[in-house]
Image (cartoon, rainbow, N blue to C red):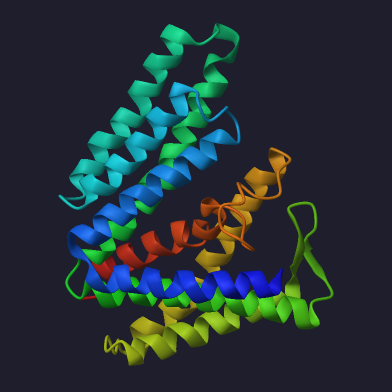
Length: 262
């Protein structure tokens, strides 16, 4: 498993960095494709993949990524669509006793993957957006990687065994420490050079967001009695399993950059 995880990361991480570095239409196209696939994967845990409703939700999520490239206000319109269109579909075509459950799950997929994920586009489009995006990406990777290896090496005390049996307090602390150090390091290497009063709170906040994103997805999977959302990413599970931390850290970085940084 470890060798497979490392091999997948060795191929996937450089590709992600290349797309992030390129930006523009390439970035938007890859993001929209990822949001579509991840939302379809998420919805398919609850539905069969060929049902029209998961395809509708995945299409709205992808549209959110494209809309974010035009401006944040488009997220309002697509959020409205995420509420209205699936509700209309289940009203017309689904059994009434299943309608509420199907609609709420469709809405959850669009908001969880599409709305949160579209902040990657918003972040990349900021001034110095490439550096902001890479700081969030690499800081998240530093958190996840540190938590994984520290937990495997010295982890003894389970953090939340009913939610994620393999996560330990030692790994959690290692992830927070590794993420903190990673944000400080990449702030310097990427050239952002935020002053201590800004970068220290961000370095403390980002790893917490990454950890909560990871645990939050685990709660949903345990509730559905699945270990991974799919097996499309060898050694890592599904796309949602790889995006879970980023779905929390990217919005945190975006609002930090737009609301806190002068």
